Length: 99
Image (cartoon, rainbow, N blue to C red; front, side, top):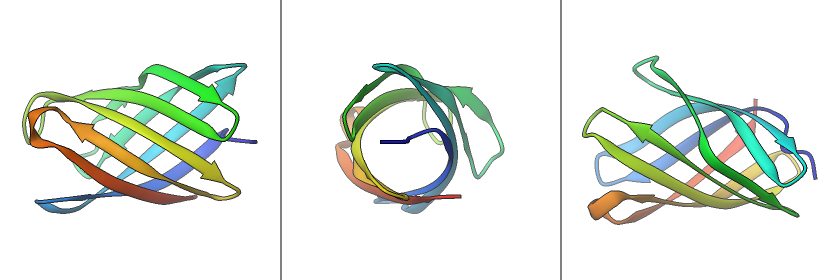
């Protein structure tokens, strides 16, 4: 399973589709990288993990509200999908493609 590379994802939130770009790299069971949203702010991913096709990571954001987004999903070829927990706002689906 190759997670390494650039991904374009969309989170389906109550505020409408939220697009962002991820640059990910796996080193064994550890996932590192950066995420950037529509506002252009780039942040390092935290707590990144890889287990087979399953991946998880978190990102701390400041807009529209300060919170930690916790992603959990799976890679299938050039597609990625799963759910993101947005603090007390609940959990929302995300999906994306390799850029």
